[in-house]
Length: 178
Image 1 (cartoon, rainbow, N blue to C red):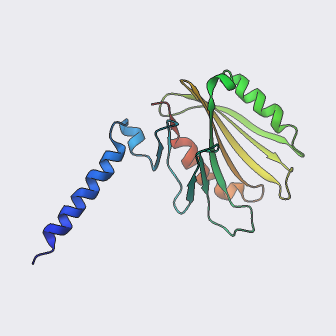
Image 2: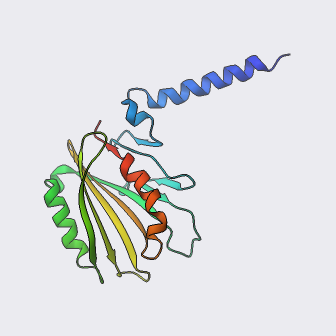
Image 3: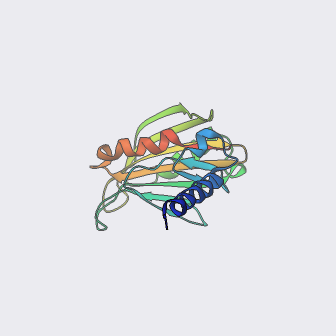
Protein backbone atom coordinates (compact mmCIF):
# COMPACT_ATOMS: atom_id res chain seq x y z
CA UNK A 1 0.00 0.00 0.00
CA UNK A 2 1.36 3.38 -1.01
CA UNK A 3 0.92 6.00 1.80
CA UNK A 4 1.48 8.97 -0.53
CA UNK A 5 -2.16 9.35 -1.67
CA UNK A 6 -3.35 9.33 1.97
CA UNK A 7 -0.72 11.89 2.98
CA UNK A 8 -1.65 14.06 0.00
CA UNK A 9 -5.35 13.85 0.90
CA UNK A 10 -4.63 14.92 4.49
CA UNK A 11 -2.47 17.81 3.25
CA UNK A 12 -5.22 19.00 0.89
CA UNK A 13 -7.84 18.72 3.65
CA UNK A 14 -5.68 20.77 6.04
CA UNK A 15 -5.05 23.41 3.37
CA UNK A 16 -8.77 23.70 2.64
CA UNK A 17 -9.57 23.90 6.34
CA UNK A 18 -7.02 26.70 6.78
CA UNK A 19 -8.32 28.53 3.72
CA UNK A 20 -11.87 28.27 5.06
CA UNK A 21 -10.85 30.07 8.25
CA UNK A 22 -9.61 33.00 6.18
CA UNK A 23 -12.41 32.98 3.60
CA UNK A 24 -14.17 36.29 3.12
CA UNK A 25 -11.36 38.37 4.59
CA UNK A 26 -9.49 41.10 2.70
CA UNK A 27 -6.13 39.76 1.49
CA UNK A 28 -4.09 42.00 3.81
CA UNK A 29 -6.11 40.77 6.82
CA UNK A 30 -6.07 37.09 5.83
CA UNK A 31 -2.25 37.13 5.77
CA UNK A 32 -1.96 38.23 9.41
CA UNK A 33 -1.16 35.78 12.22
CA UNK A 34 -4.20 36.48 14.37
CA UNK A 35 -7.71 37.45 13.27
CA UNK A 36 -10.63 38.23 15.59
CA UNK A 37 -13.68 38.23 13.30
CA UNK A 38 -16.14 39.10 16.07
CA UNK A 39 -14.32 42.28 17.15
CA UNK A 40 -12.94 42.94 13.68
CA UNK A 41 -9.23 43.26 14.34
CA UNK A 42 -6.18 41.40 13.12
CA UNK A 43 -2.49 41.58 13.95
CA UNK A 44 0.85 39.89 13.36
CA UNK A 45 2.42 38.34 16.44
CA UNK A 46 6.14 38.33 17.25
CA UNK A 47 7.91 34.99 16.85
CA UNK A 48 8.11 33.07 20.11
CA UNK A 49 5.35 35.04 21.86
CA UNK A 50 2.31 33.24 23.31
CA UNK A 51 -1.28 34.43 23.05
CA UNK A 52 -4.34 34.17 25.24
CA UNK A 53 -7.80 35.04 23.98
CA UNK A 54 -10.65 36.07 26.25
CA UNK A 55 -14.38 36.59 26.03
CA UNK A 56 -13.90 39.84 27.98
CA UNK A 57 -11.58 42.84 27.63
CA UNK A 58 -8.79 42.63 26.88
CA UNK A 59 -9.85 40.28 24.10
CA UNK A 60 -6.26 39.38 23.24
CA UNK A 61 -3.15 39.24 25.42
CA UNK A 62 0.22 38.38 23.88
CA UNK A 63 3.16 37.60 26.16
CA UNK A 64 6.82 37.71 25.26
CA UNK A 65 9.37 35.23 26.52
CA UNK A 66 10.81 35.58 29.98
CA UNK A 67 10.63 34.23 33.50
CA UNK A 68 7.26 34.31 35.25
CA UNK A 69 8.71 36.23 38.20
CA UNK A 70 9.81 39.15 36.01
CA UNK A 71 7.90 41.79 34.07
CA UNK A 72 7.46 40.01 30.77
CA UNK A 73 6.84 42.11 27.69
CA UNK A 74 3.19 42.01 26.72
CA UNK A 75 0.66 43.42 24.33
CA UNK A 76 -3.11 43.54 24.77
CA UNK A 77 -6.09 44.67 22.72
CA UNK A 78 -9.16 46.28 24.31
CA UNK A 79 -12.26 46.96 22.21
CA UNK A 80 -15.04 49.31 23.31
CA UNK A 81 -18.16 50.65 21.63
CA UNK A 82 -17.34 53.87 19.82
CA UNK A 83 -20.04 55.81 21.65
CA UNK A 84 -18.20 55.08 24.93
CA UNK A 85 -15.12 57.05 23.82
CA UNK A 86 -16.25 59.76 21.41
CA UNK A 87 -13.78 60.71 18.70
CA UNK A 88 -10.08 59.85 18.77
CA UNK A 89 -9.11 63.17 20.39
CA UNK A 90 -11.58 62.55 23.22
CA UNK A 91 -10.39 58.98 23.55
CA UNK A 92 -6.74 60.02 23.90
CA UNK A 93 -7.55 62.90 26.28
CA UNK A 94 -9.70 60.72 28.55
CA UNK A 95 -7.11 57.96 28.68
CA UNK A 96 -4.29 60.41 29.29
CA UNK A 97 -6.14 62.01 32.20
CA UNK A 98 -6.48 58.54 33.75
CA UNK A 99 -2.81 57.71 33.12
CA UNK A 100 -1.67 60.99 34.69
CA UNK A 101 -3.01 59.74 38.03
CA UNK A 102 -0.37 56.97 38.09
CA UNK A 103 2.71 57.59 40.23
CA UNK A 104 5.66 58.79 38.20
CA UNK A 105 3.66 59.26 34.99
CA UNK A 106 5.76 60.86 32.27
CA UNK A 107 4.69 61.31 28.65
CA UNK A 108 7.54 60.36 26.34
CA UNK A 109 6.05 60.91 22.88
CA UNK A 110 2.85 61.21 20.87
CA UNK A 111 2.39 60.72 17.15
CA UNK A 112 -0.26 60.13 14.51
CA UNK A 113 0.07 57.12 12.21
CA UNK A 114 -1.79 55.89 9.18
CA UNK A 115 -2.51 52.15 9.39
CA UNK A 116 -2.15 50.12 6.21
CA UNK A 117 -5.93 49.58 6.21
CA UNK A 118 -6.38 53.36 5.92
CA UNK A 119 -7.43 54.16 9.50
CA UNK A 120 -5.75 56.94 11.45
CA UNK A 121 -4.18 55.98 14.76
CA UNK A 122 -2.74 57.94 17.65
CA UNK A 123 0.27 56.46 19.44
CA UNK A 124 1.32 57.61 22.91
CA UNK A 125 4.44 56.36 24.71
CA UNK A 126 4.83 56.95 28.44
CA UNK A 127 6.53 55.81 31.63
CA UNK A 128 4.97 55.22 35.01
CA UNK A 129 6.03 53.98 38.42
CA UNK A 130 2.66 52.94 39.85
CA UNK A 131 3.70 49.31 40.32
CA UNK A 132 6.69 47.57 41.95
CA UNK A 133 8.70 47.85 38.75
CA UNK A 134 8.84 51.04 36.65
CA UNK A 135 7.07 50.43 33.35
CA UNK A 136 7.22 51.89 29.89
CA UNK A 137 4.15 51.54 27.70
CA UNK A 138 3.05 52.41 24.20
CA UNK A 139 -0.65 52.72 23.49
CA UNK A 140 -2.19 52.93 20.05
CA UNK A 141 -5.75 54.24 19.73
CA UNK A 142 -7.86 53.54 16.64
CA UNK A 143 -11.53 54.11 15.84
CA UNK A 144 -13.24 52.19 13.05
CA UNK A 145 -16.98 52.17 12.36
CA UNK A 146 -18.73 51.45 15.68
CA UNK A 147 -15.66 50.31 17.66
CA UNK A 148 -12.72 51.90 19.46
CA UNK A 149 -9.49 49.94 19.90
CA UNK A 150 -6.66 50.43 22.36
CA UNK A 151 -3.53 48.36 21.81
CA UNK A 152 -1.14 48.52 24.78
CA UNK A 153 2.48 47.34 24.65
CA UNK A 154 4.13 47.05 28.07
CA UNK A 155 7.59 46.18 29.36
CA UNK A 156 9.80 47.11 32.25
CA UNK A 157 11.25 50.57 31.72
CA UNK A 158 14.70 49.00 31.53
CA UNK A 159 13.70 46.35 28.93
CA UNK A 160 11.26 48.28 26.72
CA UNK A 161 13.92 49.15 24.13
CA UNK A 162 14.87 45.45 23.87
CA UNK A 163 11.26 44.65 22.93
CA UNK A 164 10.42 47.68 20.83
CA UNK A 165 10.88 45.89 17.48
CA UNK A 166 8.50 43.11 18.58
CA UNK A 167 5.95 45.70 19.70
CA UNK A 168 6.21 47.50 16.36
CA UNK A 169 5.57 44.21 14.50
CA UNK A 170 2.17 44.22 16.20
CA UNK A 171 1.37 47.92 15.97
CA UNK A 172 2.37 48.33 12.33
CA UNK A 173 0.40 45.26 11.23
CA UNK A 174 -2.78 46.07 13.21
CA UNK A 175 -5.91 46.10 11.01
CA UNK A 176 -9.45 46.98 12.03
CA UNK A 177 -12.94 47.39 10.69
CA UNK A 178 -12.78 45.47 7.43
